[in-house]
Amino acid sequence: MTPSKQAKAAGLKSLQQVVDFHGKKANGEPVLNLKTLRNWHEHKPAIFRTILLGVKTDIEQMRKAVKL
Image (cartoon, rainbow, N blue to C red; front, side, top):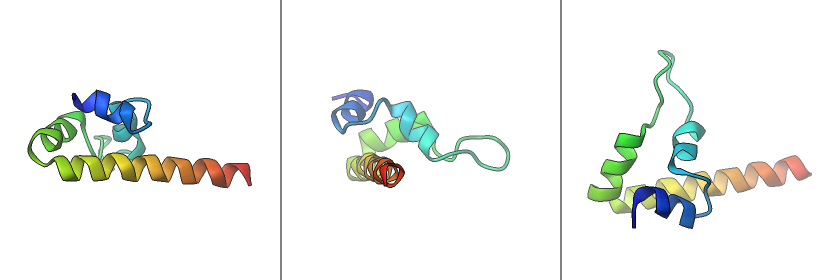
């Protein structure tokens, strides 16, 4: 499964959503980029899955907090 498809299967809109969620450094560069995520998908799949699940969980918690 491709990294993008795995992100969607985890309930995220896209792999770019993971990058955007992590924000940017002071110099404007993303904290986490697509290339890094793709490398982790290939070489460190456990880290890749952990990142996806962490972002999904954080987004769900933020949505619940907004509904309160």
